[in-house]
Image (cartoon, rainbow over all chains, first blue to last red; front, top):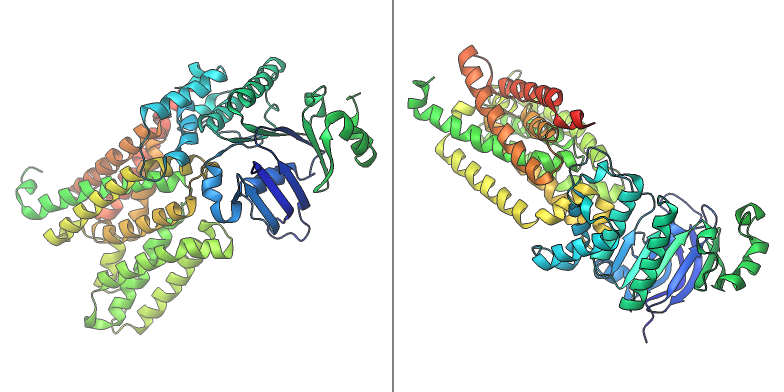
Length: 248
Length: 273
């Protein structure tokens, strides 16, 4: 079976920089897997996500998503990926309603010249309902709280009906109750729809107790990959102790 | 005022005002939302360089034709050069602005006429009363084309205006739409030259759109309000110029700025906090 994501010796360099933000990454993620990517700041976690969805150009190596080369088929690949960026905040004066933003998740799939159908709107509303924000549909998105805006962005990713979800710090602006609900929702979506879910977090407490695959990154490299308890032992020796404070 | 309306020259001017206001108000929303703010004056000044070239070439070429050619050429180059140079569009438009001003002064020096000839001045200041039936047909055709294109690609433009990177992440190829917008601005500026002039056309690009943004949180309403304010600015400015015997372009810019000031004061957005 074709893996959902396959990276072969991949390095990504930001424009104007000499040092790769991620280097020599070789990684395979099967369809339907839940993977956490953990690491300190500047470990290369966001760069890895944006390399996978082709928003950042690959400097070296190959990235295949659902069997397609991201360099050649970037647009097609992105239509299958729901992406939630880190700390995406909207200016309070932005003239967009929350529902408008969620519907944008459907645009890539509809294609150029395609029009939004009733089904597209139903999908968007359904995604908002899953996150408990359907009553915010007609509110200006910039007027919502940080946590509500984050849920709007997650709903936008879900409205796409994606095969892969790339979530960059999706819990960061949420209260503990919302974090718990989101965790359960993601597990449910993974089970019901077989969505591959890759979640980046620098908050290792968030995934403590999880038995899902965990990748630890540091300085642009993968330093450990496996079950959380197995990788922690390895990673603990490599990553500064300050990062682990409070987890045990 | 009613007496003026009996003359074909004024009827054409009013129809020209309606379409120019509608067109610039429409495009202005996209330009303002995509933060392509320098593009208006850069392309307007490329028209100035083009007109100066036309004058330098003496009677062989109509300065308006060279002005339009320069505007559209500049619009075609800005997007790809910005991508190639990996610099913001605004930076490249500023470079294009200085280049075109330099060329304009060189062409004026080469011109057989002394100082700013009436042809160059007409491109700079515009003259809506000089609009003829052929110009009107062009303007109506251009407005219809722009309306149709915006209708067809509305969802892509809508997403890019919200956030270009997220639009890209959702599978929209944003680059062609950015180029397309810059090109549309070039064409709109070029064809508005005769009406309100190269110097003041960008007042119509930015002021109605910025005023409309004061009134709503819904882009669908803003894209309707902005052209209405564009039309109101154009027609009011035109009549003001007739009443007080002042340049049309200046009056239109003045009215649109006053509308913007009133919009800021009355903005319901501010009241809601």
